Length: 197
Ligand code: VGL
Ligand code: ZN
Image (tube, rainbow, N blue to C red; front, side, top):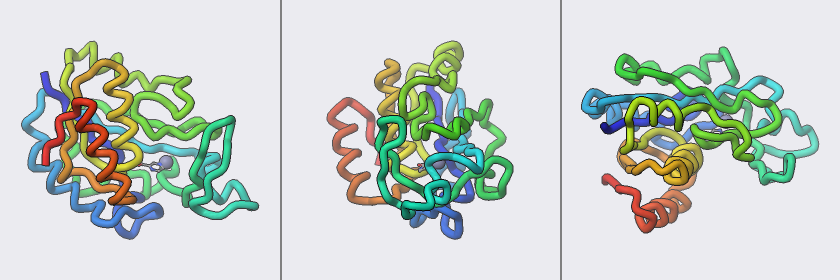
């Protein structure tokens, strides 16, 4: 049984959004083309409270994109994005969400960021995604969405750690940093991830 995991295709990650990714909106038609070919489709949604510690605005002494330590973890300070209940946190209006059976939200704890759809960055709290997928009988997961080099990448890493087979739909993912993503793709390939160009 094959599942598609759509990562964070939200307004703040597409051009015009608070944390825009070049070409981020281009993943939408790519995902729509394949979304009906899976046995199971789930989506993740970045869903932060306004006082989230990953927001540079909550660290007046720092700048956007600085890296600081929070609770012992490296944390990039982002522009305010995907704030709960805002338009920026909504899924892109063009994305066909009808086949999506479940939405897993992440990043609600103000003290810790959550790039992966499975666990927070400290690996302390599970979203329940792994258990859900196992109970549904999904063994092979295909990933797409935004940002390729951040939430998609870390979600794939956790999928492997959780014992799933993983694939990446490259055309349906866009990174914040292209060079980083290219490097990550070759790393993933060497760890057995099915890179679908
Ligand atoms: C993401 C940075 C901060 C992502 C989420 O979805 O890739 N990146 N929050
Ligand atoms: Zn975020």
